[in-house]
Length: 308
Image 1 (cartoon, rainbow, N blue to C red):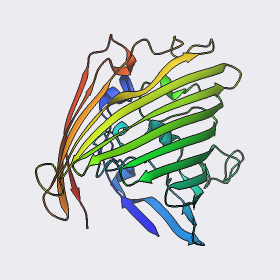
Image 2 (image 1 turned 90 degrees about the vertical axis):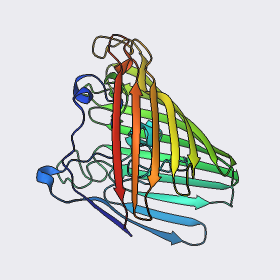
Image 3 (image 1 turned 45 degrees about the vertical axis):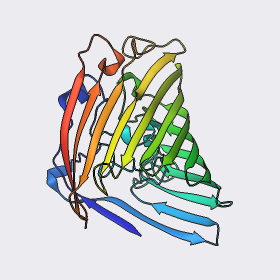
Image 4 (image 1 turned 60 degrees about the horizontal axis):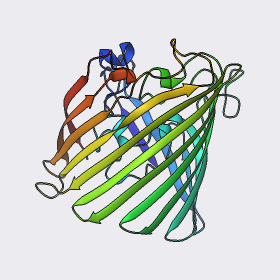
């Protein structure tokens, strides 16, 4: 069983609401009146020798397949840098089953509901917004891993990943059905280098309007034990979710994002001791909102993590 409690008063930078969702930090949290809230409540148990069952009331267990890129508290400093953006389409209460065929191949399926705790019509575990996913993990050796993800979404108003351009969220206040596909890989040529990356694609059907298409991708490089044991130097280069086209309708006056923005990120985890790490990091967003008319965005931050 895993239980996590959080409290915070951090807010997003002003550009998140005004210009773009790119460059968001992955470790900022805001709770009402700074109160402590349960951020994770989950239980995992075996069912026989090859099946694992994961039940969650507040989060998901999608495998990001990317070593050392775990979450906003211990990996990259950005929301985008931690995992394929399509994984953010799966959230809240649900259940997952993982079946391990052998040491090389694992298959997982899951169902999650966004409004499981609400009893009113159009909500509940099976009546509200929901997502279904399947994942295949192929690891022929300790040095190479390849993962495939498929996600089906049925939402009443949008398909929000909270990363990328504003148009890529397909927030038109009408029902949206999404089919998302992801490929992620991780390669360890030696103990001091980990190379990884991913590609994600979403085909979204906006009911009574047509289809929209969103892409994201990233290349990652990490150098474990850089400088001293326990430290980590990391880089992320990629494109946060971008609307590449629609079947005729417009989102904010366009069928697609006009240009291509790049997400460039560097961070260094300095392990002070077994319980404290300090992570300075830099995020550079070119052509924010995938629009060359917007000036570049630079985010410089320092994250301190305490683990007990």
